[in-house]
Image (cartoon, rainbow, N blue to C red; front, top):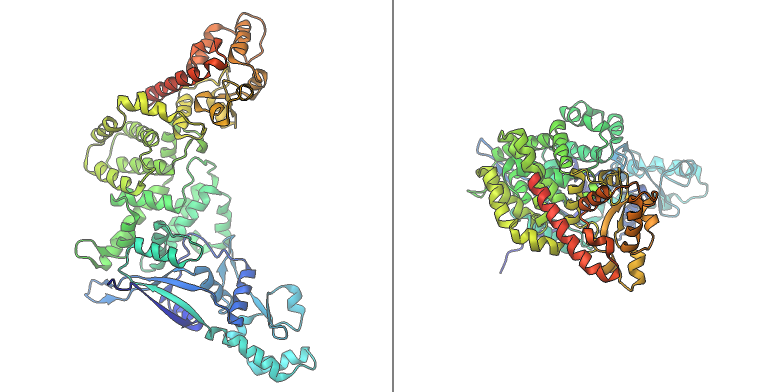
Length: 598
């Protein structure tokens, strides 16, 4: 019979709040501020007053750690579910400030009407209305004398029974005597078990990611500046998406602006690049893997708790070392030179737009590789080649799409212990054989999904080669992608629909090209043999109808760079399947040539 790994107890609200004030229970912000609006705080107070259940809190106790002097430090409880409710208590009952959605420090005041036994968010109208008590925190905390409060209230509301008002105010004050369930998880549970318990208990079925647990561990550790480090991570990720957020930080968090961390992310205030907008999961994963040579974030949670994997004990020295190593990884990640240099390498491979990158894991590991090779003092030119190749290889083979953590772990251990050139060669031999290029890749192109990773690699190859758009004389594929050009069909969609082809047949990667819209309009629903006949006339001097191509050599070059078989000039509906087969083969060959040119 398995032992129970958690306890379930009822505690008074005032007990929970006393734990928060004494730091016995830590409330990590897990990357986000208080996201409830004030009306939800009001509703929570009403539920407490009425005696309705308000769910459970879930806390995970940090393990006890051995200190250098041989003594043991008691582990805190880390709140992993119920943050918003407990923060609402501290705001409404204790009168504490909260950080709102705009990262501003505000107070949420809840008013109470004893006549109606109703709660409301304080506003100007309520403040002027004598039937309302404007701020329940002052009453519950005992800052005001109840007898004086009753008399003041009766002076504003005639013919009100003194005992009636006193009883209602006393009922309000007893809110903190109401009970709340706390599920406390044992410190020796691993992340997988904690996650499973969380999902089963949480009525919404929402899971916690391992990055959430890491953020919890970071935020809860004040000994090594955990809350500031967590904020550093949060602010970087926010600025990467919204540079204008910089002014918010300077306005509402002046304490943080005095730190070195703030100076190290200030470069983002003018950064408009959106190719790589990492969230805290990405940042932690890259920082951890590149510095600790491990791929599983569960290990980082254990290390930040002080776990000695050999003795299975918890030691303060390991906590200290782990925080220092993680901080180093984070600083390397957010370093302006590293970040911009990495993006330059990715762009130099033709990936100029976020819509060409569908695998965040491939991008994350490419950055891990860049940071790792740089730390190993590889030649900068070699780093560029290796990062480009590894990134494209990862996308083409779906290397990090199945079990990314296991593969991260496998790859970083090999990269840390072997010459990377040799390791890359061994992976190429295993995953990029002739059979892959000639058969598997061609088969992977048999899809209608325009966001297919293989098609995106083909488009990146076109960008890198500076290819022109289909039937364009001067406009490049890069121009069309950068300026929101559209993907069109070589065999027009309407033409294929009129010939009874279904959506999955006419929407095929083999039929997709980047084409100027004005050229597409001119083609309309003509069969290829029809519009190419007119293109021949155009090349013979009959006037421009389809773009600016005016010579047979230009036309032939355009077909080649767009992987269009030259037999297209005489094709109609009867040749559509033949066209798709030929073009998939040409696309696969272009991708192969592109890869080995990187």
